[in-house]
Amino acid sequence: MLEIKYSEKAVKQIKNISASNFKDAERILTGIERYASSPLDKHDIKFLKGRFGEFRRLRIGNYRVIFDNENNIMFV
Image (tube, rainbow, N blue to C red; front, side, top):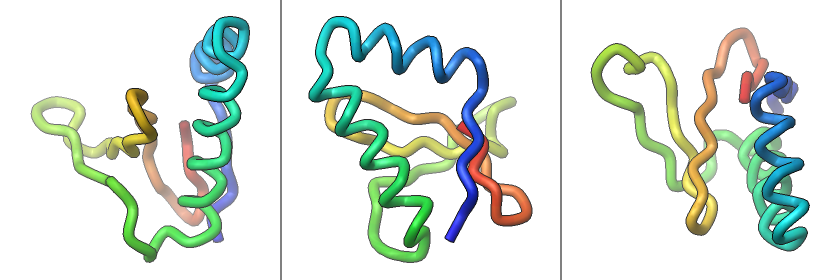
């Protein structure tokens, strides 16, 4: 299980999404928690390319969550 840490920008984006569509924001948070609780299960994960190659993206519906895993911590 991974510990989840959100950047200020991620929190702001989730608040913006929540203001316009609460269900989408709830689905995003649930997807992040689902990945953090079982990262070895099948998820729609891809590594980014180019200079952001160390980051991964998790697709949740029409949204993409950019994150990094380090020492059992998921930085969103």
